[in-house]
Length: 473
Image (tube, rainbow, N blue to C red; front, side, top):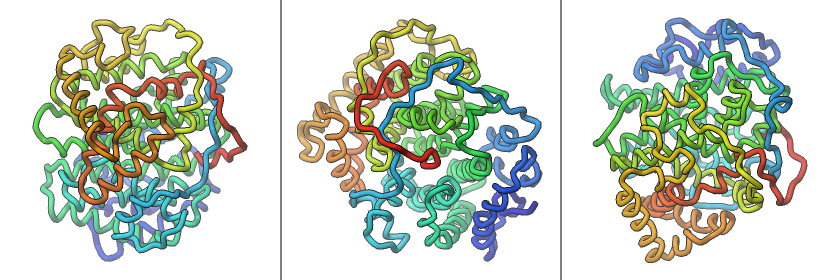
């Protein structure tokens, strides 16, 4: 079955690439009706160029979706308690304005609640997580365009309104591929970023074809499933892109993969309750729980904190920035209602003892050494160089004390922080991301307690609830 996204001519360009990409989107309803376990094998051309530049992910998407990869189906609630209490997930829409000012430069849309939501959640997913002042502007826009192209795929179940700009998104997608091949060399990290985004889009395409909202299911190989989640969440693409903001210092494939996992783990911690209710397996916490038949919070939190502490020790800020920006974006997006969730979680009644290094696969994937005190899950307590941590924290606190837009951020509740983020994204849209970055670093270093609570199935949600559609996940 011939498609552009899975075909051999994807990177060849041509005047018809945008039309072929659009045809792939229009094919989704028919493919969903005729889905079978071998669909990925039938769609994927063996000569597909995806994985040419980001070579560690070559073949990963097909491997996780192949009929040969026997699915590990599970009724997880029978073996591991699942957290599901949360405010209802909303559709697309937002009262916020800053991201629309950026989005409207490229996609001419009216200032309505819908399009503010599209700018915030879709285009903003990449734009909010990167520093446009340190990176190639066309690559920043291209990465956000990938999110726009992926919108009618990832949100196929409910976002028909976005179809009005599908043609523009496809043309912008083709232009991004052309830009990277024209302006960045064959061995450049920019080409790896683009390649990783295309793998992400392939994964999203296959994910939406599966029967949904039925029961949790995961691939049969834990490490491959974790790596796949880092791809289909765009954690890997964004880690590669963020690493380019500060090209000096340590860099390697293990660090990129760990950074992508840790960054998106904060997204998945906040999303976990909705994902569980919708029987969604593509969540780092759920994937680990499926494979281990045990609660996954302790090992995944340990993995993340170890990475961030190691990054602080080595004066390596980009893994911390990606994680913090991801969480801030998650809290800002109107439809997630994450601040409402975080502000209405009850404290844990007691921590069930578990070995934070019990997961051998995660241990092998971490570039950081084991913590001296494994039960201390604070970043400062894990840092070897606590003075480096203190300096970073002091820089953030000094900024909050002096900046009118950020003043009081360190003392605010999560719902109160939305106003700080609105001003921060406004400043970023004007060309200065300092407010967002200070809030991002401070949040990872000192404000994650309630985020971990959100992922904890023993922690109840005490706030407003309501009926919601699992297809809104």
